[in-house]
Length: 391
Length: 90
Image (cartoon, rainbow over all chains, first blue to last red; front, side, top):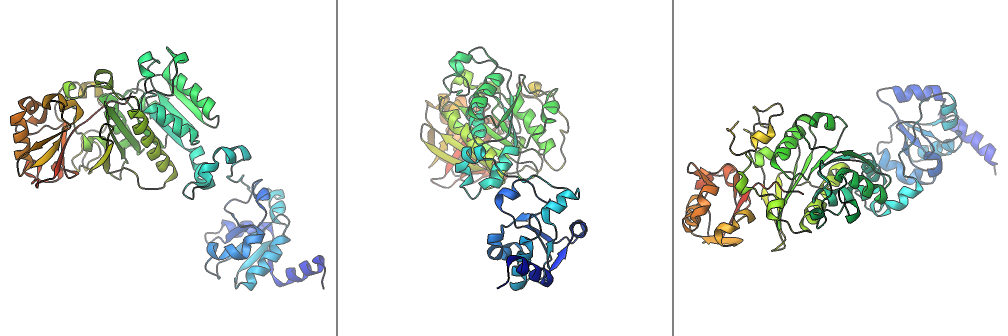
């Protein structure tokens, strides 16, 4: 029987090897080969060659066919030193793969030669523990959780809807939360605005939200904006870079303003609104469905549109609607499931009834239609103050 | 007979009811029946003989503006939803 050294030498003569310079050339070509890192998980997590997929040596034979169904597909295998990849290449040749090479010198030589490496995207132990219930869901998993940690969600309002939405997005590990609110915590808020507490009365809501979230999940960076969203500051706030906007505003001017901004910037908008026992919820996805102006071309006159401050709201109602907004926002960040785009969900807490109506993109919409008549920010307070002329 | 769902901000005009039965074979006839019985609803729902632009009307979940507007037929037993925008979020 041959020794390990003898067997390695024998296999090395049977398979093809490339050095790191040649491998670098192959990988830079337009028809680059499939690059497979066959090291163990702990080695992979400390750095890898960009573009590699990870199949540990022990799983190589069972998993390669899913990664490379075509056996004529060129494949480059690498390990740490270029020894395990010799055995791997031999196995793949036995499976019928015709163009398999082993990277001589492996990752060590690659790194020593100064070629680019990248730190793989993986969660550390603490994050694995914190997000373990997400990691168990196939639609989320480690990749999805990393997407959430890199996601940036802007919340308009840290009030009734913003409170549960911010708490659940933060708990879920959305990496960056912007919170726009120019209000301070008032005693009348605490019946429903669960981000805040009695000890925070009089504090800025955006700062109170930041404190609460810091205690809940230190992975989350909170960007507080102690201001009301206006035509003057919207571009500055959006320039900070947001993937999804959650609208929990309490007035029509802000809702029309953020709608127009979301259409122009192509940022999905998760809309929620509440009154007494009833809520409305939908997703406006620019380019792929209607916008707020398709749904409500004009705001109602003030007598038809009492606010929660005037008409009241059941304390738990924003908890339900805001949590649904968080759910829609998470799905958008993850890119999974069916969003509420094109559907308006109505919730009636008194009847405990959900119903749905269809929303359609209006080709004549002044903002997202075929020939838009509104292409820059308008005076939204004036637009919503009574009966402005139809634009 | 069909049922018209009344939004919370208009329930004061119909004695607090969440749904009101109405007679008619089109949205126009149903709304006329409703507004005849509760005249204070008319200025809140109608503008120049049309549905006010800030109120959406759905028949079986479809916006009547995408159907035949006020002439959209409503079959016996179907539900009509009146839906004005709500701004509240705080």
